[in-house]
Length: 323
Image 1 (cartoon, helix red, strand yellow):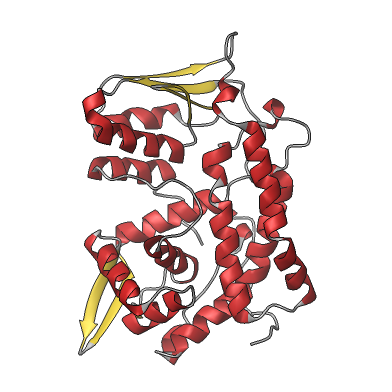
Image 2 (cartoon, rainbow, N blue to C red):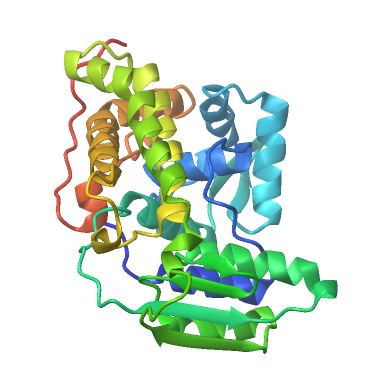
């Protein structure tokens, strides 16, 4: 089951202490993001390392060449996300401790998005800060941290969130090297609404486009006509599409939104496919690994949305599908 600690705030704090940038929550997975997502989805808490050959085959399933796969693995090892080991002429890879927790918290933040309570106390968390123009690199890093924490820019140097924990900000900013900071909890009292920090029309259209983009796959899942390879690819695609929304929407309170806000419909599409494709995708992952180590392949696993949110139980047996 997913670990509750370290939290997403702890992940961001660690990145601030390292001086590294958190990526924008956007689609179009790079090979590095692709590999860490695959390992996070199906190999997160497995203690054994995967053979390099299996890693190459997993990435090849998504059109990544062997040369690019090896370069991707090497970069992740250099970044400390993966650990490498050798046995004879064979190389093996596994998550480092930090890499595993980074993957866990990123997946948690994505899968759990849209499931929280709609209760809102009416107070905004407001972060005001000043970073000199000559420190643009620092400004870029701080903005990446704020977006992951659910903030959006109302004005330059003034970011707002309806749900962020204000106590988490000061240590993150201090670790990043920003001293000119103030954090407030405030209610709206006139002027420009904090809600204008989000482009609601664009977000609503993105939700509708997400539902439409996955309509055919949902129909094929329901009819049982997906191959294992199709299920493996589509589960990654639906996850990759859903990952954009925490950065776009910040789980905005329903009281502030139009009555026909399409988040719930999009969430239903995501959960139906993520959960329904899980057993088939896991079986395809096992097939790929089994070509390199049949015994090791049995350790692959997957989690449903209910598992991630602590509201479900594991379903281990893959459903019938075309091979």
